[in-house]
Length: 267
Image (cartoon, rainbow, N blue to C red; front, top):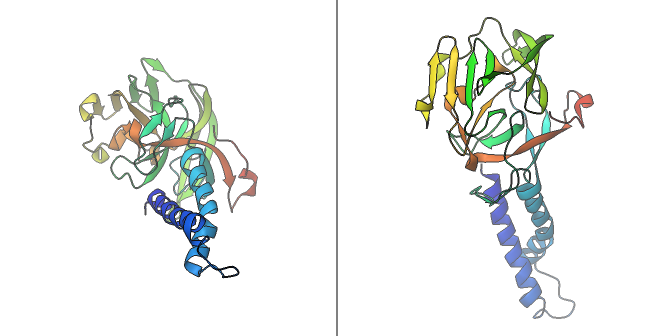
């Protein structure tokens, strides 16, 4: 469901009714005559719908985390807020950027439209920006020839869907200005070669049993999940075009299962 399109249509419909009431119907109604319901309801809801539309389209949008691909940073069931203003102002529905403000930086957690199906929103961490050469060999990340430092940080055990128990190793990783946690599973390969798709600029990448190497094209980004071995990300379906960017995740505002997570910033 394209919620942005629905909001645009609601704003247009209620706005037209509200404007018609202000400019015509109110002037031609007899004194004391009540508004007909088909004017009262749309005209009353128009200011509320307009405010929600502006906030959601240009400033802040809420999302719910549906999977464990960003563990341990984000848990299944986290409700997060995404800053729509950070990376620029975009036209609703078509998502075209009309005013550039900032560009995504390595280490930022970003929401974007899934390249294979733009009706779906994904969330991952920015690993590569335009022009970067990304290598992931034997589960060690290298950017432009420089290996990204990691530090062992114990274990992280969790249940996947279907009640499958997963024992993962937790590490601290420094990506740009972001020191964050990420997980790997010793028995999993760096990339499941059978899952790699044919995607735009696929020739920019080379895969083998030990990992891969990719050159990020202009106006595109390479993203990976913090739960490295349980994430469908740029390793498999390719680069994220600039036009697919939604915004930067910055806050956990609710979690029904763990109230202590409320108010935590997303690093």
